[in-house]
Image (cartoon, rainbow over all chains, first blue to last red; front, side):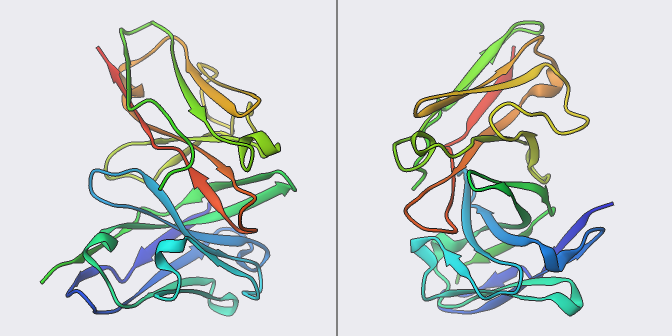
Length: 122
Length: 112
């Protein structure tokens, strides 16, 4: 059974930092792209960042470039998101998801974690 | 900054059919990238409902169906049930950035 379990969320002051983690099990983690997706209160889903199997390719939504860093440790079956210079608008539930590509035109998320809440407030 | 547009809400009585549209552009859906759909209940993990425009993962009822044409896609729910009340999102890829994934604005389905 595929499981993705996020951790590391919490209350942080504006300008602060957090490191989110996602523990994966039930599939060969090292063979898959992975993504972080977030949902701010009252808003829709927003893709944040993803990376390829060995972490050599990383992509970010414009609003987090330079502040967020996605990474992975295939030996530990873990995905990470380092979030710095936090702003109130970064308040959201952050989900990790397996980012599946089954063709050059087909990219989607087939498994998701339950999410971890990040609240940015003074 | 969603680049895929959905109606904010749709509603229907139990047993009825509802459809949700998803409108993109020439850099995503219109460029030939597939559209996928997710069901999201508050406090839970989003669930993949339709992948590759029309395909249902194992366990998804055949009441849910998807289609795509040009720069748009649609999700149809037939035989609406109370348990279908949720938020629904379309998703695709955008050619503006290699790794870019884009979501729709989301649609709240209400069962009357």
